[in-house]
Length: 472
Image (cartoon, rainbow, N blue to C red):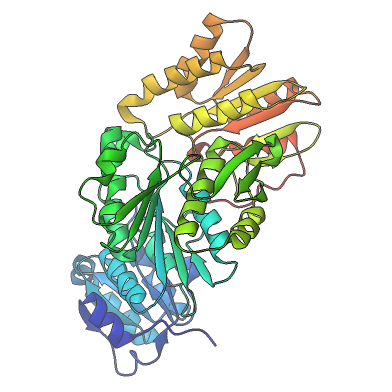
């Protein structure tokens, strides 16, 4: 039997608005909350959102026809379409709650749902590493207690509140990744979650085109720490350049994490493609994720868990169970070894990936496939020029570039050195075929670029039977 999330009257009480229903239509419970009509099922509540291409309100009839029970409706849409909406209600015995905005109503409902739960809430944000840190925290905390994590990329002002309804009564911990691509988003998400613990992985340059400056990004991420109660705990990296700013005016106690300050950390051996061997108070822990950036994520998660009283045995078991996520440091082994790190890209994460490729001990050739970095705004030209300068400093044998923004990188490398073979393509098939013709057994290839480029498509040309895995 499906779990009942709300009764109709309870939703009205939480979100406000004006209910419209026929006799008996409000009876029975709501079993799920959706914003995609394709996910409609019996007993669902529909949140119709207006996007760039369409308006979810036009799918209300479809949702009701599949058994949907209730739909939010924006005031403006109701006033213009009341007759047809009432017809749907009669035909399918559906009900409406008329609200100023369906998204605002979703936020209130998610906040109200969490208010009923006794779960301890942890918020994770940052320019890089937040998804991996969330996954590491979940892996450790779930060793002894039921733990919720928002799935995949459900970290936005739409995705996070929709994920909230998956929190169960027996969950002790809930770890929420909080993403951001515009001002005000972290504050909105923190208002919904009301975290007791918050961790900022770092302040980088992701989405700087939308925010305008790194200082503005720091101010946005700081909203997580400002939302913590005086009894709460906040965590920032020990070398965070914005540390003083992030601490200022925060009620909660702020702690640092990193190689010097994570409690019990005694060092780590870099195992290259096999990750790290971490030493924690005499325990040797094989942490399978590659790169210094992932070691930093692990140290953040360890610091949080130590403060929560989690034992070293649980930390060890959790860390050793972590698996690479799609497009985030995935290793595909074969005649050619592929490092698939194409979930996203910004200047900070590009440099970290380049450093890993440069520093790894490898007998064969090292090749980079780099896609353009998006959402950089006025920083676009400077950021791509800097990327070219970084590449010139590394020991790479070949570089394949994709996207118009990479023209700057191509010209810089081409005119500076003949040590690195460099190619630029504007079509994914051309890029993949040129790369395939260049590769030989024993090569290692790093593939990295912004999410919108979907650079994972290159892999099937190199490894025809490879399945791309999770898309987010």
